[in-house]
Length: 327
Ligand SMILES: O=C(O)[C@H](O)COP(=O)(O)O
Image (cartoon, rainbow, N blue to C red):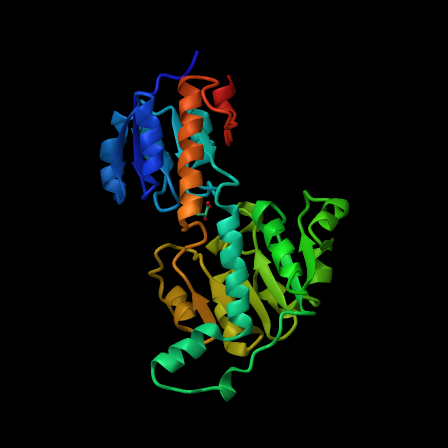
């Protein structure tokens, strides 16, 4: 017997295919690409399911207001914008589409790493402003440099394979991945204290949880090579922004490519100063923003919802973040 889900609220610009799939099974969908907290609070009592990307914060307050809510679907990987504990306590299931956008996040990571090595953004910005600054922008090859990948899940592994093909030495940290598994994607497993003085580039691919908040902080940065380059397509809270700005100003961090920020969209003056810094390349959380990834996440989350209503309709497995649906 499936869940009784008649109407779903889809927000944050989730792909149209999500709506199409749900509609084709008789499930009514209301789409609101942009929604404020106040609107969400007002709307949520009318729905049995909510589908979000990272923009909407599904707080306890929203969950409490969702008197009919049975499931929250995250059309993407990270569930740090959803109060999963509060959902669990209320018997509301949380599901996500964990692997569906991994390749896109990986490709942006690789692109940003290359952009840092060759000053692509400042050089292009200078040329657009009429400056032919060849001497300013002598880069470095990636070949032979050490890339540290912190978090060897779906995205980290794909990054390892691709950057290894550029001749980079890949070192990785992930407490849940063995040294043997690391070999499959050309990475050498190391402890963090071994990694800091070795890495020329550090890229972050861990989820944002209490133990990973401020993972990269002043203590860590001072153990790194002077001029280390950071890439963050994971989550803003993984890097302490105050410590990053200090390290950029001191030249301890040579450059940073940031796709994610402590608060999005960024309004804090400190974050804005980081974004404006000449050694920083910043993009507005575009890791999963490709046509292919959005088709995959829309499809995966819709098929899981249909399976909850009509069990066994699709082969897509349930990516359940909370366990309450199993009861
Ligand atoms: O956690 C994720 O899946 C990525 O950060 C993408 O987030 P988005 O769906 O808001 O683009």
